[in-house]
Length: 348
Image (cartoon, rainbow, N blue to C red; front, side, top):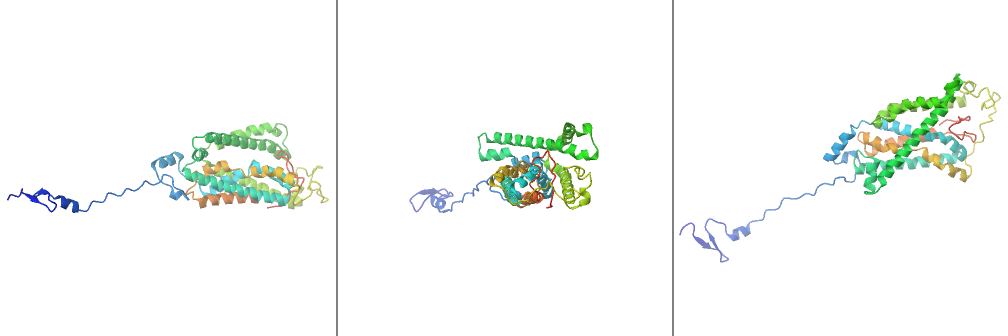
């Protein structure tokens, strides 16, 4: 019999010698298919920058956004400078109307809610991917709606109002600041100072990165510290009160610190006033903590922007703002930012 001869198998089938039988094929273990792993989620729930997925589109977006150079220190400077701005100028009058106890409670409550809002905005920006924007957060929240355009319009109007308020403060404050130095004539024209402020502010608002404003913020906070020290010295030092440079009303009937020790313009100090007065001043306390428009940009540029580092920047900024504002003011405090207050007393 040749090697090609057919042989019978147990099941009655025939096979040619040299070829595998059906039984041998059936008896072989099947090869397991290769395991198929599902693709990782593009944007899983995030708790820190370190857990972000490094997809190609994300890397390209990060390159377009530039290198992250911000630190917690620069974030605190920029956030604090944003908070302690024009909105803070109305707080003394709000304290005078509410009383120091009610005013302190409103200040703390608004500060806590403001900090919570900053935390939630930063967490939402983490979820949509960095670098984020208010538009990307709005599109992720309500895709296909007109909400992103409404958000952009609201931020534009808000920033325009804040920029205008700074020009108003410059125009109202500079003439009063230089008048005791002997200035007169055109130097007391508020329009001159507004026009002079525009070329100074224009380059600052045109910077591409908000982290570049840290030195300007440091200078602004340094000026604020100088004014605070001056107020404390003015309130406690009789020699300084008599100086025409520090007290322009020293030789007039508007002097709050006459030589006989009577303080006619200080007014009464109360812990609380009417509930209606307190409700009317709530918008001032809310507006005084406005800084939410900058939190996304600041955290985009923050190195290793984990929730802990972002929270540190937020808490420190809010604490500085609240501490700066917790001053004792009497009920004759100026009701308008256009009028310089004549009753500074106390220190934080």
